[in-house]
Length: 549
Ligand SMILES: [Zn+2]
Image 1 (cartoon, rainbow, N blue to C red):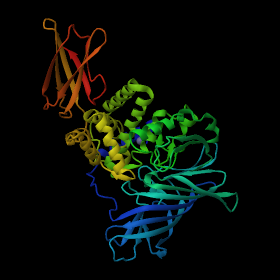
Image 2 (cartoon, rainbow, N blue to C red):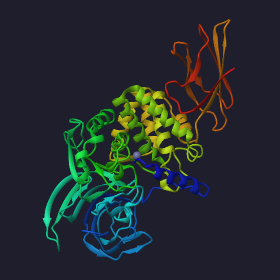
Image 3 (tube, protein in one colour):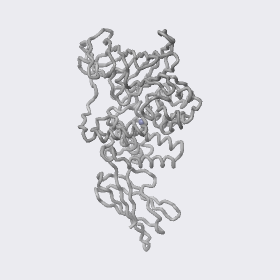
Image 4 (cartoon, helix red, strand yellow):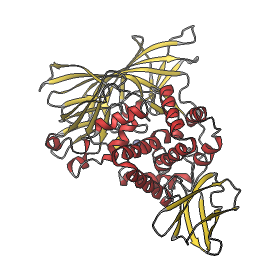
């Protein structure tokens, strides 16, 4: 997702307040004995207000001997539960439904679990009147708010397909994950109502399962990225807006076809049945719901959605959505990837200087951070407040680590590994070591040290350079020292010597020294340099200080 500035501020405050008291989080599999493979969810959406009536049918595999299935569900009231069509005595307490399972002799058992439920939703499905007084309903689940309206195993490790059967006022547009299956008019008590069915045939995490029920109008962007779609030939893309914004489309969505094309070429075929870009009530700047990205409302009514946000959310369709972090501490596999692949979109759309500027901005953001980057590693197994994981580590530092990894292994090995990682884990889940294994295989390098220093330790190198010019011997001498604040790192450093014409002469120094050690470099220069720049191509996450002796 993309954070709006205020949301980021809240996330950062979350880091500060919770970190001191955070206890070591035991990373245990969430519900290892069960796997939901499919959700079929029927919801009656009202004309006004927040009260829904719903029926969910879950296809559940039990993989270890257990006699009770525990599902997450907050706030709403369960009226009845069936297992394989038979009513069972369930208990609803502390945000869960405990469902007794009939005894079976075999180890692996499949169940169909039906839950009849309803009530006033308070979160997850956001029911509210828009600025024109029209009722709208938008799912907004990240990280674990789906349990406010979907009885589920609400954790990214458990991905499933989903069928949505939504009955809503016929005046509203109903949109959800996947492909439109059918629509039909149904008899309501008052005004006409319509049942709309959407089906997502690829497994997605519950946090990406959403519906939109609102007075949306569709702007058809057309078939894009033909030959680069997994489930059909082309990717149908649309923008859905409030009626009064439709005339401004496609606006900043004009290049979404090129974006999907670029990502499909770099990574793998587009994973879903369509891609809808939706004006919504999400609390985030954008939320990457699989095949139906929900964007914040305000930019649609103002200057337009930022193209970088669109590229970020679009990149999530591959990273986060198709390949999902199995455990929350690895959320950089989602946010860091979306950040970096949005920068790669900039490279394709605006060239190398635009890309370098974006990486320089990302680096400045990391170096300016005082909340997460200097205190926590990117893979943060301590933080228990999930919103606090939306920080400069998961986004910007994770993105910059990919940038350095690309330099470390080389362009070809990097993208070969990205494609292999994607192909292996799409519609499934991964952790950071799964990425490392693919990078090690394609590059034939051991990368444990790289992943450890950049992802499992806080901070970044601090490099000080002191230089002098010896006119007699026409030599430039540079002394390079790493600061001790975050310990010593291992990296190649490009030292740029700028002459009077502005030309940069580059020398690469291997900074593989111990803490506090100084590396000396000497190079010929016909005249005294105008200045020395460290890392002129923005390849390294570090802060730099250069002084002339
Ligand atoms: Zn994101």
